Length: 448
Ligand SMILES: NC(=O)c1ccc[n+]([C@@H]2O[C@H](COP(=O)([O-])OP(=O)(O)OC[C@H]3O[C@@H](n4cnc5c(N)ncnc54)[C@H](OP(=O)(O)O)[C@@H]3O)[C@@H](O)[C@H]2O)c1
Picture 1 (cartoon, rainbow, N blue to C red):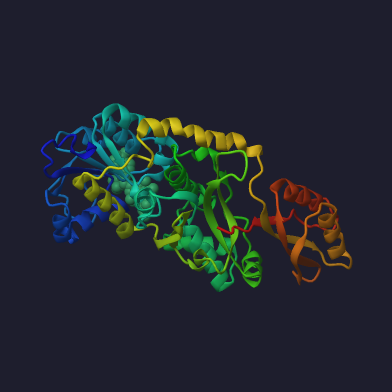
Picture 2: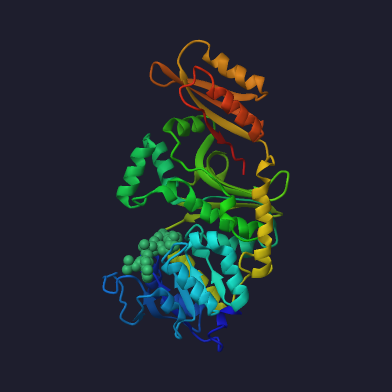
């Protein structure tokens, strides 16, 4: 077991924590608050020996006096009295990434919450483990407190995975929930989320879907094999979502959610991975996941559908996932990095996902779509719009016109399943109509 590499007697695990922010302090608190439970679950002991952060003197509300302080995280990773590095600094480069690489080069065990690093440099980390015999645990990198990696990689190991999807960003789910409940515009709710500390001062990682895409890349690798392939993800965030889209989607029987979805392509091979605002039927349990909650839905053969819902971020939930990984390490549980065979096979398996990227031209499954058009409010407009759709054989399931502001109207349309190329042609033709005030907004209906 890789976890005993620097600890050959299989005795207590000596832990170094790189990063003493929200997650790092949460881990220290959890180790202390639940010491009795943890002692029973990891009887040989978990002991923090050293910590690292930028500022050695800041009061973090926890007693750091029992631990050595290392200003440099990579030095912490190399310390003789550190068997396991907990990396909770973050970033694909810089101190956190350097510390992880140092620890893996030394054949040590790493527990990380750093989704960006695992999603974007997963192949490199897999090679280091292969070469040096260390181990990497990353439960906290995906959906915070939800044991999504463990559920998928171990609990569902007997299944052929059909799809994995999730509400993977709590900030976006919070914003969409507030827009719906309080009938407010996106910008207004975003400003409130920033004031409450839910959203960063620079919210682009969240609202543009990048954070969800990091988590999706990891989930997809675990579900379908290979290493995370972040660059293959089709990405769209929630900046373009309007209150009227959410409200009319509800009237049509759907909820509008930012989802990350990975599923094998209908044709052409590979896995399609996308993050986008989509409509989900209200009958699907993920439609009822609101506020800052996350959820991961896995469909597998023969298990059918599983949904895990919980808190996707925050001190306690994220620390819960980090400490679960520590206990796995202490127990000698070390599944293959991304679930299939070993790290070398996983690195080679990246071909499956590269194929997915190359297969971009290949059609995916046909999808129903929800359209919002803003048009001049004058007679004949519905007929013009309908003509464009019927000329391109896109059939309408439902169409509703609603006054926007006296001189302009919204037309909302639900169309039957069609390939993306057909929908793209319709969107381009609609945009050319004189009555159109802005290009149409189009959302896929994700059946899951
Ligand atoms: N927060 C969450 O809910 C959550 C959930 C899931 C995953 N994560 C991931 O967990 C990681 C940590 O997130 P966080 O929210 O805990 O971040 P955070 O509150 O910003 O804390 C980051 C910590 O890293 C330290 N740090 C920064 N640069 C450093 C350097 N050069 N050398 C040593 N230490 C350095 C900071 O030190 P100072 O305190 O001295 O400035 C700080 O203690 C990230 O990868 C994040 O994506 C977070």
